[in-house]
Length: 379
Image 1 (cartoon, rainbow, N blue to C red):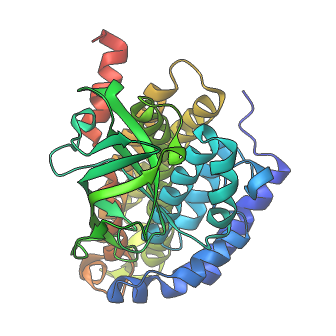
Image 2: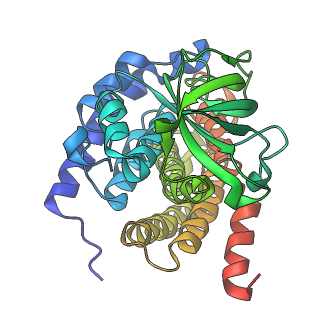
């Protein structure tokens, strides 16, 4: 049980930290205000290996571990939570193709995904199938050497901009075992997109409904076997939950560091805020809770990487705890800034808006409790 990071881990953690400081943080406010998807900056991140973090290296991936990914995403999120969250989703989609796709599919799509020459989206959620994802209605019907897909996916990050869509569609009967996974290209006839959603946060990444109207996809674009799609989706979410948890940690740590500096400078009643014991105790609690969350995320990352029996439960625990604590810390830091924290001139209100959705996506925190309680008490 060695908690020390290796020299290699410290090195790429530092690379991610420096990239966040130089390439993300200075522009995050403008990306948020203008709803700008920073494609060239994302490709710079890809050049550092951050677009295929746990994709195998024979197709251009970095072939790092889940723990390595958690370290990277925490550091990147200190620069821009929203943009980093999209990088996480892109990585999840690429990992599904790499892990479950056949060799031709891997070689066809992953080299460009690993450089972000092309961007990827993950399509599971539907208007009527959110937390109950296994009830999805989008259907793929076999027709010769193709599948014809009809239906719609909701809240898709990258929707309308991504070039590749990893889509879960029903090829069999009701329930999880009837779902399969497909790679669908953006220019496929019948594929269209709704208007861009107007969101509270995550404004540096596009979000839209993805519509399938008789979209014909070659059978060779199936990822894994027929009926394996829901298993693939859930395996992807184990890692996605860790990444989103790490993004919450990064955003919260950035706010806490900024708040410590503010409290040393800001004076009220003739003394710096940092001299008031009640406020000092709040900082101590925030730091303690973030450290606890960080340990949970890293422990779960090791479990997911090693495919431990309780990996899904540990990932759910870590996601629930880290995203709840992350939002609590950011909200508390805004409070400690007083009125200034509420202004666009300061980044905390933006980070508050960005981390709030982490308690909802990749499985709501209520669903995380369902997963944990089932493991403890049985179904």
